[in-house]
Image (cartoon, rainbow, N blue to C red; front, side, top):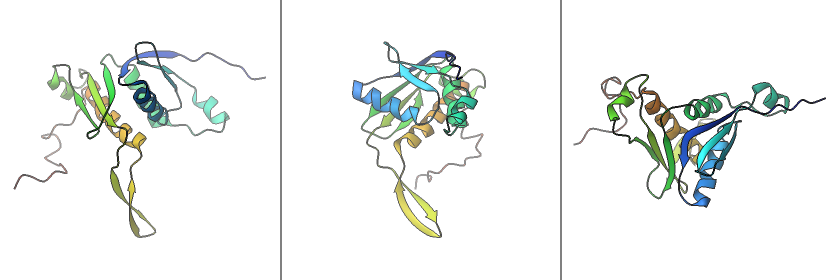
Length: 173
């Protein structure tokens, strides 16, 4: 006998903006990162139906632990996040006027992400000592930007000073 229990629900402060097709695409990429059930309410806010790890594994599915924790933590945040599509580069930013709170643990700020749904970003991979180029899947780009936004929302952004100046951009010539 299988017992069905309703899942705890979180109505988050995460809004997915844009056209219906853009919202649907962004939601589908987010769903690739988590086992939790995701859908949008009438205000285009993300609703998260939490699932139990044992139930997922009993169904023979892979438990997406890190993605689940990220989505759940962001859904529970008091700060808002807006995700929308762009034709420019994918990026995250802080926008609620308290920019400095992004660096204060426990304070945090509201954030936004713009995601290029037609991104064609390349990276290098090495398999069997052969170097090749491959495109980065859009859900991985979204995960990357979600991590930045999550850190800002928790006040855990690492400043240039804290990183000892370790940046990938070269200084101006």
